[in-house]
Amino acid sequence: MGQVIVLKHVRLTKTFQAVEAAALSLDSELDGLSAAAAIGLPDFSEETAMLRTYVRTLSVLLQAMTPDEIDEAGLSDRHALAEDAVNRCAANLKTLTRQHAPSPFANIA
Figure 1: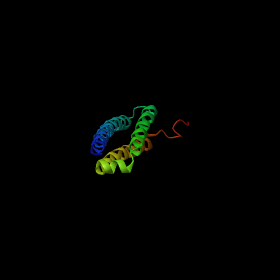
Figure 2: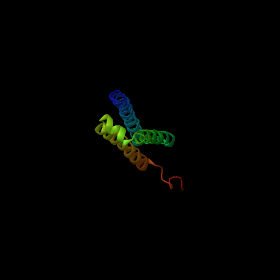
Figure 3: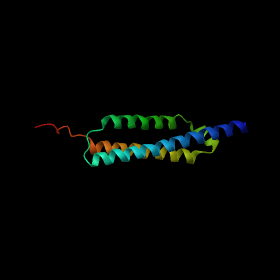
Figure 4: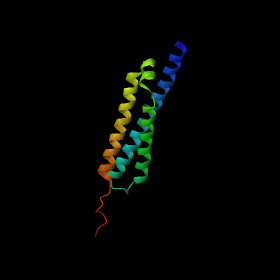
């Protein structure tokens, strides 16, 4: 039984590391898009759609972990940190798309 718990701990730790690294990468992409939007570069709806899918994938990955297996491996705090990182990215993406979305009245003469 001890070997199973150790294996779960290792698997979950590696998963959390991957999620946290992905969230850092996503933050970097969001910073780049925000800078591009701030200087008036054209619409980037394809990029934001891709990043939105990326955030959803990370969220689903975290939700797929059962609370029992997280507790059993002793990684509740690590799960909370990873969840916070993904939620922060989702909020930043939402803010970016809201701030720099083209107005529906932009092309009306």
